[in-house]
Image (cartoon, rainbow, N blue to C red):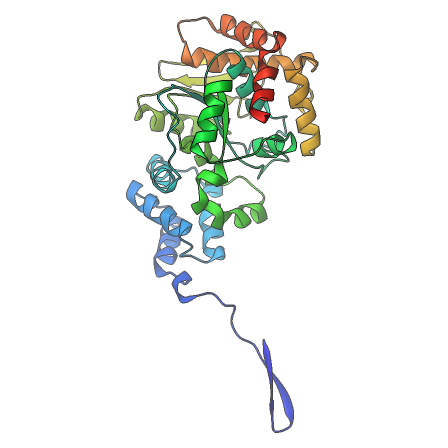
Amino acid sequence: MWKTTVGGKRRVIYRCPPFTVHRQNTKMKNTLNRLYNHETLTREDAKTILISISNERYNPVQVASFMTVYQMRDIALAELQGFRDALLELCVKIDLGNAKTLDIVGTGGDGKNTFNISTTSAVVIAGAGYKVTKHGSYGVSSAVGSSNVLMQLGYEFTNDESILKRQLDEAGLCFLHAPLFHPAMKAVVPIRKQLGMKTFFNMLGPLVNPVQPEYQLFGTFSMELSRLYQYVMQETGRQFTIVYATDGYDEISLTGNAKVRTHLSEKMLVPNDFNLEKLAPKSLYGGETPEDAAAIFTSVLKDVATTAQKNVVTANAGLAIHTIKPEISLVDCVAEARESIESGRALAVFEKILT
């Protein structure tokens, strides 16, 4: 808006918002029309569009509209593959040596507001003697994400290869803060925050760990997405486990049954398969602040948490260990995770990467 004077009278003139010409992109308009007509994208189209979003070739309204399409229908396999291809192509590459590592991560977006089970489990797995390269970020659709907790506890994020390799060699664990490895996604962070709901980026996060570890335990927020993850991971030849709790959790919750898909089989797990009792949902509540979440995280590692908090962590950590060593019984893998906590090794691992 600007003002001028004509014939002694002031006149107010409004100008259009300063969207640059390149953002008024006809290709995105055509793509949106296709999607509104219930068409799906090819793998190559999906890759090209996400690269264009990363390069800020579309305006925020177009990007938000594109994101919300996948709130109204399930993402197609080719679309998920194409989006993943784009992010892996754009990410900051890192070489942490020849160690075979594991990632344990959920999509988020389940709306359960549990404490940071996968982040805590990652430390426990490392305490049990396995190498972990944990990929994560800030909370978007939940109160507190993995990175919020780690920041609260004083962990310093980096994409410096030498620092991360030292942490992995000495402690068996390092954290890969997603924004440092996927800087191209910076453009969509404000839009995701304003939407305040899960988007297809929640679906992508677990699939684009820049290390692409040999072993992966995924949690998904829907049964359909767990099936798509299975198809995506079968292409990679890696060992994986994909979890969807049938009461909606994106991890083993012990509150009910969980559908589990692996590189070897599919099955339904119940709490008794872990030699653990069923839990009440309220026992997994994570609080509303980073301070709340950090307190639970620390209490589990110090072995002063509630029985429910400790059990759900050992269940998830045990399933991750079982992904690495499927020849060992799940109950024995859970026992390994429990020993990691009770021996103090899990706490020692975390203290080591803070120094």
